[in-house]
Each structure stands twice: as C-alpha cells, then as structure tokens.
Image 1: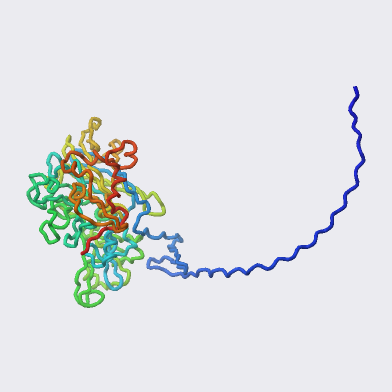
Image 2: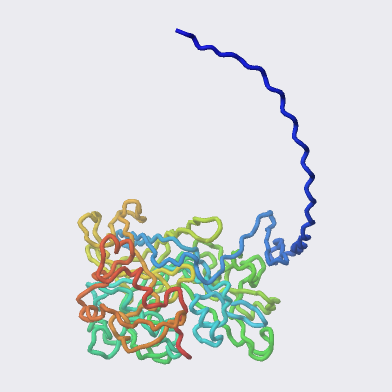
Length: 569
C-alpha cells in the first residue's frame, strides 16, 4: 500500500502596490438655508389671586401659584370627548322602620357649578347653562330660553341624578310600568323640535288632553284637574342641594298639551313639592337711576356675597371661577348648614353699595341661593354623598350619591313606601354638558320592599329591611341599571302622533324620521319598551331583540351630538 505524500512548494513573489487614484472634482456649494423663525417672547404678570401668569406670543400660557405649582386650566369645551351614549348606574335600596335609603353610583364629572351672573362690558350677564341653551343664545341673542352665555363655561351645568316613582297601589299614570320616564318627554319641551317661545320654560309633564285616546291623557280616571301631581321625583343636584346636604323633593304634574306660558297650568310640569324648595334664584332687577353702573334702569343683581363670610370679598373674579371657595351662596340662616359649612352667604345689593361695593369687569356672583327648605319640598336628605376623583388632570370621578326620606310622609305629592309592596322607578342623570334633552334616561324598573330576606323577590331592585340607623351597603343587593341618551325621542313620536310632522336635521339637512314602528303596540299597551329593545349593543349581541338596542336606534331619529332643530320665535 502506497502512503500519500505531500510536497511543499516555494512562496511566490509579493505583488506590486497599485497606483494612487486621481483626486475627485470638488462639488459646488449648497443653497444657503432659510433663517429660522423668531422664538416666542413671554411676559410675566400676576392675576387677582396673586398667581404668576406667564403669557407668550405663540399663544401659550402657564399659571404658577405661590407654592410654585402649575395651576391647571379650567375644563372647558362644549362637547365631551367620550360621546358616550349609555351610562351604567349601580343602584341599591334599603329601609328600616321609618326611613327609605337610596344609593346610586356612576362615573362622570364633579359638576358642582350652576348658573352665575358675570359683570362684563358694563352689564351683568347670565352664564353657565347647558350647551343646548348656549346654542340657542348664540344663534339668537334675544332667545328667551336663556340669555347671555359664555360658551367657554357652558359645561358648568351641574351633575344630577333623579328617581321618578309610581305606586301601582295608588296609581295615577296608566302604564308607567311599561314606558316610564318616556311618558313625560314631549316635542314642545324646551330644547325640543316643536318648542316655541309661547311654551315658556316648559319641562317634563304627563299629558292631560281632553281625548278619548289613553296615550293623549294617560292619567288615571281619578285625576280630574290639570296641574295635579302624578309622579314623585327625588331630584339630587350637585350644586342646588348637595352643597348643603339636601336634595329637592319634586313632582311631575298633569298638563294640557295646548297650554302655553300664560296658562294657569303652564310652564314646567316638573315642580318642587309644596313648601319651600332647597334652592331659590336671584334675578337681575331694576336698581333705579344711579344705583348700578351706568344710568337709567341698568339692571343689578339682587344679592352679592357677604364679605364677612368670604374674607372681605363681595364677588369673585371670572378668571378664578374654578378655584374660588365662594362658588355658591346660602341664606343668612343657613351659614352653618351642610358639609361645607361655614358657607358664604348673600348680601342685599343696597347693603353692598352702602358698604362701598362698585362692580368692575369680571365680577361674578352665584345666581342660585341655597337654603334648608321646608315642608314636603325638603323631605329628602343627602346623607353622606361623596365624589372620588379618578384622574388628577380633570374632574372625572365616581359619584356615590346617597339619599334618604321618611317611608311615609302623608303628602299628596309623595309616594309612600310600604313593606312588601312593589313600585316602579325611572332613573335619569345629567353629566358634563349632557343636560336638558341630552340627559341620560332609563327604562322603568321594578322595586320591591322585600323585608330582611330578598332571595324570593323577582323585582329588579330589591330594597332590604335592616335594623339600625344606617344601611350596611355591603350586604344590600346591587342592580346595574343602563341609561341611554334619548336625543329628540319623545312620547309624541313613540305613540305615533308625529307622522305628519316634518323637519330636517340641521346638521345634515336630512329629513328626521317621525315614524315609530312600534307605535301601534304602544297604543294598544300590549308591549313594553323592553319587549322590543335592549339598551346596550352588548346585550343585543348576546340576546338579539326585535327592535334592536336603544344604543343603536336612538341616534336614528337624530338629535344626539348634533344641533337642535330650533323653531322660529
């Protein structure tokens, strides 16, 4: 066998270096760049609160308080970015031997402001109502629906929750258990399509027309007089009541559709119960020549803030709107009423002038005056309501609203609650700028006073009997209610009274559909709203309904997140 053999050869010579390359031709100079924009210049000043305000020519500004903290700008804007059609509300109810307790929890804004007079341009202007009234005033400054409004603070409309009760054992409205709050909404209410100036400040009511049609006169036969209270309304409001630990006990009355602002039963079908309501309203009045700034009959406010209760101030400045502790006022007798006491109180205009007050640009005073109230109107108490802020950057948070009232009041405008009985309730809520016709509303729910053991009850809301003075809410069943924005949905539309009416959506120009496919069933009272509709789209995907979800169908009649089809004055 021959072994493999490897022989190493000699190394080759090193290769030569290549020639150097020729230098390239220099390129031409580039075009000179443009001069940069001039930087913004800033100036520093102080506002009335002593904060440092840095304002720059690029339109930006920042406010820094005495501790060096940046002061966030106020929450402004006419449209809340969420544009949420459905609001979930957790509801609980309990009672002892004397008192009915209600707890509702929902997420939204704090909304503790409501209506102000602002001195600007030499006159007192009315500011801070809902966006629908803002739109009406901006389109027509003489529109009696409102007055002067600065749209920058239009969302100071207060947060609210309302419970509308009907008692089947003492019935006053036919079929409320089927249709609930929707029976009180009509096309001639303020902010609705057929409203005219002759209707005045008309809000929810039950129709009391001379008609053989039950849907045109859904009151029970025992109700024979227009203006009679027919529904009990527990109305909690973040400004007009809560600030002094109260809620407004109100009623919804029977009103003729044809009544106008001059009729005996005209105006709001929703009214405070008999007695003295927990809030009053100061007006602009003729102070006489020389009394106010200007001459002749320049209008004044009736009251300003009492400087003895505000650290020496008759008013607060407009720029301090969202920071002042004097954003509300009470009567003198209620200086120590409620959880925020001591309260800023009112002072009559003439006394303020005698004390040296003269209005100047930016002066602001509350329009509403809070008071303890009396009689049936003051039956409901705010018992431990809280607002928990969920964001450090805006006023978004969780409302935990707690109301209580005697089980039995013996007042004709109240529903009395009896152990073992079942009632019906409609729930509504106002949040952000979603007030007026934009507020959230529910289908009717059943409520049973179950005794100590709710397990056998089939009611939606189970009110549980407890021993003591305060419910242990952790042991009380919670019901999740869903509220939807109704837009221009009305009783007139639902029962088929508007098929001949015509108007166009001002946002798109498209005709508004005035035909409700379920009108015949509602006139026959054979179906409830819930027989044909779920509330949310999620519910409808799980169990499809014949009429679709309200979340999807409500916007089909327009009026949600769009302009109001305002009639001519």
